[in-house]
Image 1 (cartoon, rainbow, N blue to C red):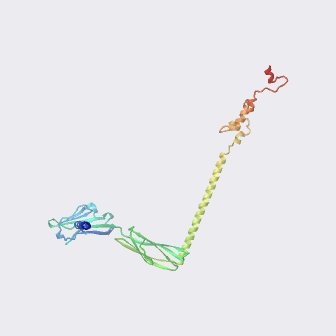
Image 2: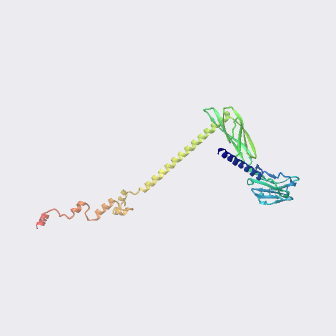
Length: 331
C-alpha cells in the first residue's frame, strides 16, 4: 500500500514538472531586460528575414507593429506616439522603441510565421524601465565626545534619481546602508567612498574627513553659540509671559474697580445734598432690605415690629379721668 501511494505521488510530481516545461515550451523563452528612462529597446527576431512571412510585435497582448513579408505596418500609432522605428536590414528585421518611459514597462512579444504558415517559437521580453542614478554626494557632520576623546562622524550618502538604489561604502569603514557612523581620534583622517547602483546605472562619490583641533574648536564654539541663543530665547519668552500676566492682572483690577463703584452704602447715601429724595429712587437695581424697612417705617402709621402689632390698640395708662379695663368690664 505504501509503495502504491509513493508511486502515485511520484507520477503526480512528474506530471506537474512536465506540465510546467510544456507550458514554457509553448509560450516560448522569456528574457528580463532592465532599461533606463530615455534609453532605447530593440526588438529583433532570431529567424533570418528570408524565412519569415509574417512578424507581429505586441505589448501586453496588444499588437503595435506588423511585418507582412514585404513591408512594415504601424498598427497602433498611439502606443508610442512617434517613438517607434522599424528596421529592415539585409538579414534580420526589427523594431526599436526610443526614449523609453516608465509606462513602457511590460511584456513584449514577437510572434513569427514562416512559409506555409509555419509557426515559430514566440519570443518574450519582460521590460523594466527605471530611473537612472544621476548624482551621488556625501554629507558629513560630527560630534565631539569629550569623555572618549574622539570625534564621532555621521556620513550620509545622497542620491538624485532613483530613490531606492543599493549602497556600498568602502575605505576606512564598510557598509551597505545609506548612513555610516564611526569614531576617529584627534589628528586622524580617513577617506571613504560611497557607491550607489541599480539595474541600469552606477555612481560613486569620495570624501576625506579629519578629526582636527580646528574642527573640534569650531564645533565647541557652535555648541556654545546654540546654548546662548537658546538661553536668550527662553529668557525673552519668560519676560514676555510675565509682562502679559501683569497687563492682564492690571486690566482685570481696573475692570473690577469700575464695576464696584456703586455699593449698598453709596446707594444709601446717594443724592448728596438733596437728602429729601428717597433712597429707593436713587437705587438703579431696586431697593435693598435696609431701605425697604426704613422707608416703610417712616411713611406708614402701621406697627413696625411684632410687639407693636400686638399692643398697638392697647388703652392708655389709667388716669384720674379714665377707668381701667376691669372697670369697663364690670360696668
